[in-house]
Image (tube, rainbow, N blue to C red; front, side, top):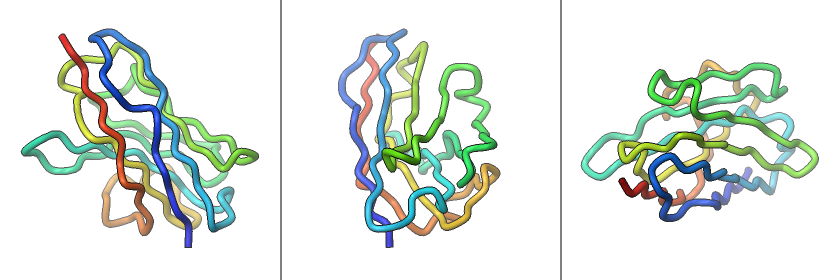
Length: 125
């Protein structure tokens, strides 16, 4: 079983570039495909980005492509989400998720077995 803890959220101005982190423990991190999802108030949770267990491939939602970058550091058991050019519509609770030997094409929350508690990102205009 792997435990996930997100950090790095907060209040950010429009156009800002925060980086979210998700620290994993309790499992062999390098074997887990990782994803980031977000949920805005009154909306369903949506896919943001994913990275394969090997780190060799990534995949992004159209809404963030070219602005967000997912990466991982297996030595630190951490996955990151670098967010650039933030917009008010990026405001949401951001969650990281993990699945054993997951690939970067896993876009549905049902494909992930482990979830963090989430970190709030609020973008002010």
